[in-house]
Image 1: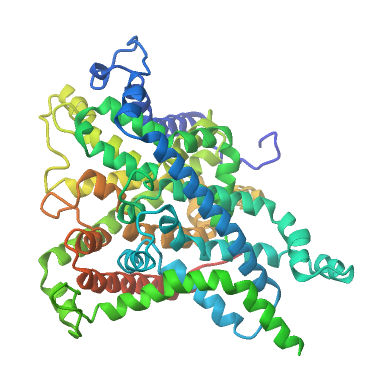
Image 2: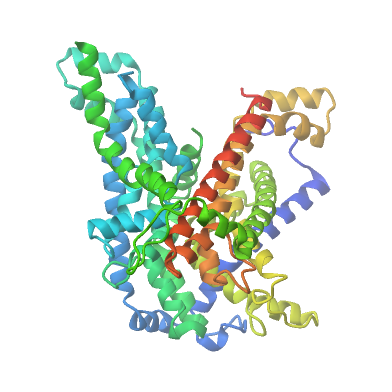
Length: 280
Length: 291
């Protein structure tokens, strides 16, 4: 029995415990190896990218060269604008829609909800041909809004917030209404504050999804002014620099760094957010 | 009167989201379906109705069949392995072994990295002669092999990357579910003299079934919608050995600009996904014991 009150009658002991610990660590090392390799290569001179020498001198030269070779600062800005735009619009739209679904059964609400859930199966990631045609028709090809638009009305976000709003006690809602609050005031004063952890969870999931998204931005963008980091990295590494692993690793780390640092700092929140977002 | 008002309020709240959903999900889905029965518009000849001709072209196209077969093997190879690994990781991290916070972090890290960044790193691992894999195997005297350049090994190589990326993501759902199993169950089964394996097989695993279904649905969808690593690592090659369905849609639509054929293939993919979802719902759902 453990001291913390959890039951560990089946916690391994003796030899079994040793095997399990060694196994878990071996797998962990294997899982962290690619990242460790990228860090090693990015901070060392190119001659060490294929040779491991523990005392090799550290350098930031690869980052400088990557920054000189491609407009990564601009790509960073584009990605930050993109994830902010997507998340901002998603929060507003999904909150309003979830509020509509959570509290009242109105005429057509069932059909509307089914139409929303359809997006969970028919994902924007797959509808690339037609969405490209639509963006071309609207005349916004090669712009950041064109990357964002198909993802703004997120079925997942609506569903997640609807579940949360449904769990808010009706008494709170009614009390606010008795005091004369209108529907939107009730939403802002009662529902939104109570859903804060879910907003955080959804925000983290959304930001990491759109920071990392690649295929649709690759298709719809064509210039430095609109390309996000992921597409910039691909253009960069498939270009002239194709063989210089140190620069590519430096660029790769730069691309992933903000999310990675955020993850290391807020590990618990990240894991819990992905868990919360997954259990519906 | 109040019913009408409720409906007006409801639809006003829904309006922005529904408008965008209609524009970027419902309309394109419908348009994809319609376009799949028309020819690709060309400057000299606008689109005209061709019936099932695009589907017939697909059926005669060996690359389509190869992409389909590849995608099925990809799904069949990555889904069970990453789910099994996820379960193993969760069981390990759930036990109080030394350094489990660090271990959990290591497992989960690939989830927050962009697939495209990961693919670049793995690309180097697989590089012949001086890549990491070649060097490690070379130390054991095994000759260098062009892992991504060979038809026999390329698909397995991209599958390994997908497994590595996904297992840690699925782990956290299992971890959450494991932590919700009441400790009294373990105590009771230990009192009855059940072995640890018996406890896992008869208690933990059945209680984890709703999680398994959730993870399975996600894994299937991911296996058919993630092609970032294909674009970075192999571009479908060598000789279409790693072409997956969505990659083929991308290739048809944006390299060959044959949008009608791409639409027909999109319909095939969407219908396939819907069938899989329905099958999972119809066959697995009734067998699952929910708490």
